Length: 82
Image (tube, rainbow, N blue to C red; front, side, top):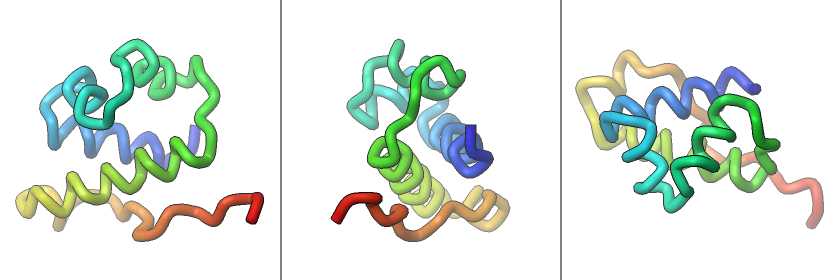
C-alpha cells in the first residue's frame, strides 16, 4: 500500500479516535475499511483519492496535529480515463 494512504488512515484514526469511527464518517462499512487498510482489498484510485481528501480535511480541522502531520496531497490524482 502507498505510504500516503497509510498516513491518511492514521490521520483519520487520530481525528475520529478509532478506525471504526473513521469508517463510519467516510460512509464505508467497517469491514471494508479494515480490508482496505490492511491490504486485503484492492483500493481503486477513486477510493484512494477520497480517503486522501478526507484525511487532509481531518488534519486541517485539528490544528494541534496539522503542524506535525505528514503532508497529504492537496488534490486527488487525475483519473486515468477522461
